[in-house]
Image (cartoon, rainbow, N blue to C red):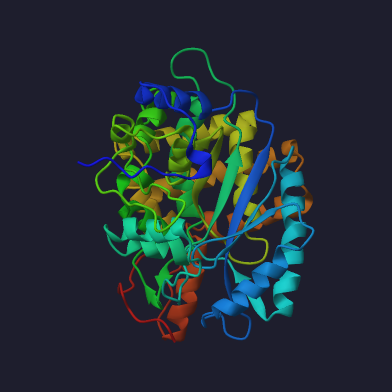
Length: 445
């Protein structure tokens, strides 16, 4: 295998030592978890942008660019960024409390919606665009290279880049417990509870006007991608060591260049790159970390990436409130840990998102009996914890309403969309999540 092209970016010139492999692995181990009590929470909310007059129509790129240029001038606290297909993302700053996070992002979203509405545009919360095919808006070297890399495995990569949206919740890694396992308990909980969150908040049952056979098509896309890039590392050992090995063994997506297209190597792991005649720099490592998309990404804090975008203007608040309560309230966290422990036996040694447990959550939502039972207990624990976290009456009511509408009945938001479409086709909707639909049936009208 030939050595990768050397990036000549100005920020990629940090010197490397003769033992780059050991240096890089030690660096990843040192930075992946920040130790300390849980103090802050953040959220990154992605939205599909659509025409107000007809949400199924694509928005002309020129109109999107003009609207996004105007958004960047808004006096908001959240970072506003654009995904490759034109999806809009708002990322809150780290907040000292759940309510500070919710209130800050809610205010920013109000300003964003007002400006977009004046331009005839709106925001939709779906984990996967139900109607429009993938079409890339951003023409940048990073996304050109990403598309070339992902196309090698199939069409799922383009759909992930251009038509998916999520609610990503960022929580502190917490205390590092004595012994070699360190952050294992909170890390383990993120992955086991993650399947429950996938099922409870599944909201992407359609693509291109057809039912896909999944309650969370977005999760099915992640499961179909290159596992070296989208999977979790093994969960049984010390998380620092497992993540560091995972990072170095992951394939290199691209090597940056100052001019021209970025190089997209084939079959080259980052570890192999460190052993080459032109090993990567610290900046190359930092960039490589941004090209890994596991369901839980350790970035000093824990970034939980498995939740579909939610319906309604404020639907995103419920997963933020529930997840924060189940991690940061000690009593609720213990309940979640005990409740999800039996699910780990079902998952076996397989890791998310391709483990049988996570695939069941993506396919069936809370129609899966074990996930339904776990969700009922976890949502009840979260509801009890929210007053202790200072949650407002409105937030507690939103969680209660979601629990009554979906969790108690073994449903998820995806079922609402499917029921609506089935009514239009004269079929009896599924009330308890039984899957009697024909996969691939045209439901675009």
